[in-house]
Length: 231
Ligand code: OAD
Image (cartoon, rainbow, N blue to C red; front, side, top):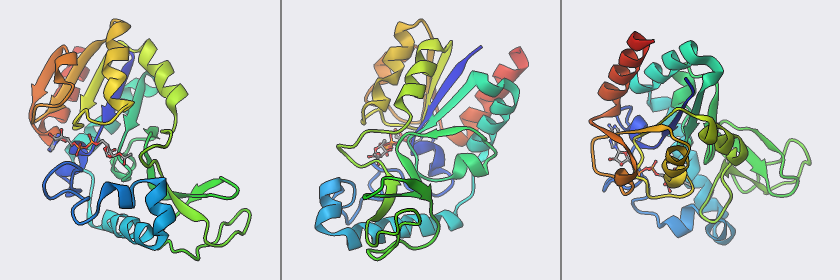
């Protein structure tokens, strides 16, 4: 059985990472256009670096929760038959034990150079004077995070997994941002069973065959255990 799982900010909520569209969300005090667009970065790269430096530093204060760990357990059983796609830029899936995670919106722990475009690992503070380890350009290093108007990562691999899957599960995402919000329709058209796990009503809820209403930290381990019991 091939399973594709898409996760969003909700899976990390119980770990203490604020979601985007909650009233106490990460965007508070910052307009999206200022901190999550290429134009905002061009206008004020210092502000954008500060915003992501703060989020990167916050990773040290959070731990994976039972939902992240349950998906790692599922990977151990399914191997390559599980494709885990996340819109999250935190590293909680990896720290929860998952080995193969497709970060479609990038990662706080990666950087890229706007000159040579080489992506690389990044920890600590990034500034307007940070130097590219490859082409040595100064001041052209930026977070490897997909901003509005930019192309998400891994789309070919994601599309291939979606058209081949038997089950598609969406966990903790509001279904507001495309292309991720459209994955359920691709999977459904291929005949996959579609399941959504979320405590709240989402914008694309009507596309799912099954709804599991509740928090990821409780419902994901329960769903994984049930699946493994049936196997
Ligand atoms: P949102 O903040 O839009 O949605 C979070 C979802 O998590 C909501 O549907 C909540 O109901 C749900 N939720 C809250 N607590 C939960 C819990 N304990 N368990 C399960 N679900 C819970 O975040 P995303 O849908 O991930 O893109 O946002 C998608 C993209 O929008 C982000 O990746 C980001 C943002 O713009 C980029 O940065 C490119």
